[in-house]
Length: 140
Image (cartoon, rainbow, N blue to C red; front, side, top):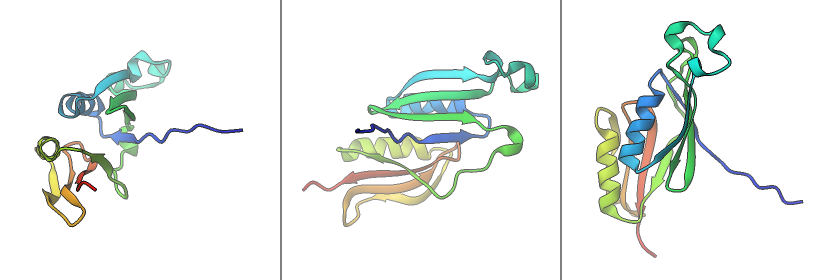
């Protein structure tokens, strides 16, 4: 019996999941497929009213791939560490555009530049604390 499986990053946000997804939709040419707020879920009755607008679950399609995310409860949020979301591009100009957009108000760890394996490679953490690697490999 053959099993099919997909690997989807699930990103945790500090109360700004909806803002981040809307930014990624614009910046990455992504599409928000689903956003469920805590207030529109069966859990609303057990949540404080100030949390009702927070995202319980969201799904975004980026280049045919799925990224999911939500707002962590305030007392449980931890800034992501130990992983990077990697975006791979065919064109250096597109890698440069996305790197510039994601790094705005973020922190660049490695500037986008040519490396021995890539026409462009760089690392950053965006304004939403999500770590990204941008890669445009050399042909051949």
